[in-house]
Length: 129
Image (cartoon, rainbow, N blue to C red; front, side):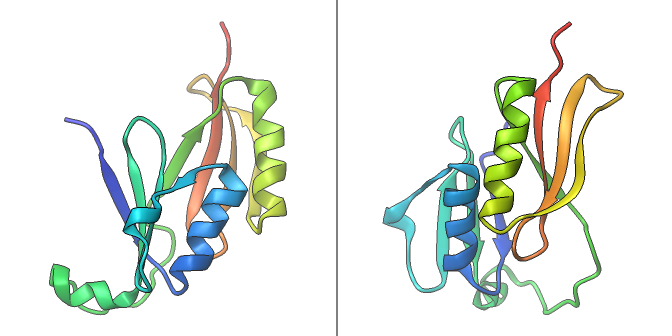
């Protein structure tokens, strides 16, 4: 089994998809674009979708109030030296830096950020041993 797809409900799907293209360098899947939906290729065939709230009835999901951070994505870069430029690019495109990059207890050098709609993600690289 592998994760193939994740979707965020978004207030502004176009702006959020643009952030992931410009801020993280992901490629938009233009063939999937419409007024209510966008998606980007996140590597190894995994897609990230952005849908308007109009998607709720199609997945039988009632309106629910936001309750804070419930999930996060981790994007890997090749080396520890690649983390800082990736953070700078994301922040320049509108991300908020939540935590500067640090060495973690699980062998990663990792920064924590929020996208323009508040979704948390990490930029991470394995620390060479």
